[in-house]
Image (cartoon, rainbow, N blue to C red; front, side, top):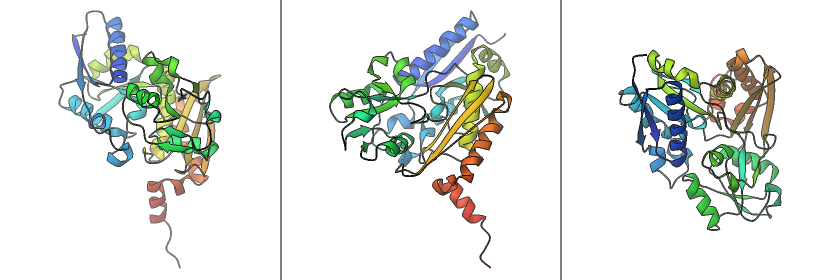
Length: 318
């Protein structure tokens, strides 16, 4: 193959760099002689640390600068945590490859308490995720939540300083950074369904760059790609954003694709859950079907865009 160098655009956080070094190693192993260059970037999402993401534009702030590097051809690929990638990509972009998924669950991290159930009444929990807040609130209505931003080490330091009784992080990130020892307990998927794509690393490139896509192909993990495609289809149909608690998790079991989905109110007083199973080859169709089932259960009332659409299409009173 003619291409002798591939340039990776990445955020410069410790976790993003781990993911990028992992992809770099996989590429070099698959293509001896290929030079891989890393271009570290600071995104707007990294720069804004004093406000919740929902107030400043959502998780898409972590990928816009990386996509700009692809568009102006100063980079060939970008490496993303799939949970941070908007559901609708630019028409010029494609994510043809997803690496094998790490544990997608959320981690309960505390220096004093062994599990979520052991927290005393009114304890303070650190997380900026409305998905986590709503699902945990559904089982622990007494807890107090405080926003928690920053990289993994910053969040752990704030816990160690006593600012929180516990914090909620992703199991995958802690494991990848060699901090698995800080995981007090993993929250069960039955109690806290993960965000779509959580634990998966995706590789984005220009849709027209067939040479790069051929180089990336050996890195793809088919089961992860199928599961995340299903989850993202559900979120896309619901027009989900980080402002609304939406969760989706799919996995292949006994030759079938099983997917569970959740939509909740911000306070966790109303939580809608549904599940389906179907053929792996129909992953996106299955995700959309489950989204429709959640809408039938009343999810539109909890989703601002869906509620507005439904009101706009409602027949006028006679």
